[in-house]
Image (cartoon, rainbow, N blue to C red; front, side):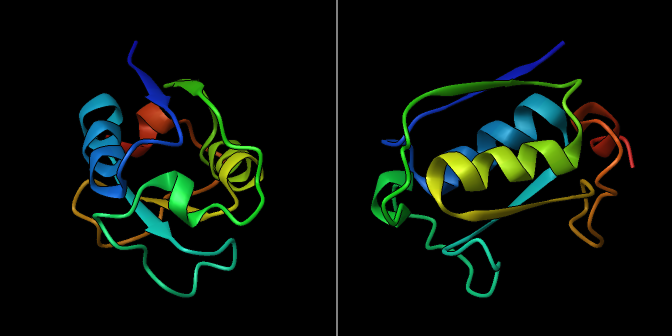
Amino acid sequence: MADLRIDSRMKVKTLKANFKKAFGATLRVYTTPACKAKADDEATLGSLMAGAKGGEATFGSNLRVGNFEKKITEMYGIGVQVANPADTKLSDNDITLAAAGKE
């Protein structure tokens, strides 16, 4: 079972690559919780946080997609969406991160 470790110093491109490696699914990262503007790959999570608490977190593959997206927004003040491996459609919020990598 794969785990994903995140901290505020991590760059967006590193987060996306580590997410793909851990779960097989694609992670879309946005500058706000409303998911309107995509985040720059060179930005750090800390630079995108607007007063959020940040810090370190570890996520397991049995976590549901919706819960993962909610926890990232709560911790880092940014929006993320989990998509299938080909990045053609968003994953259902009720499946696990591991299942999202197999869509």
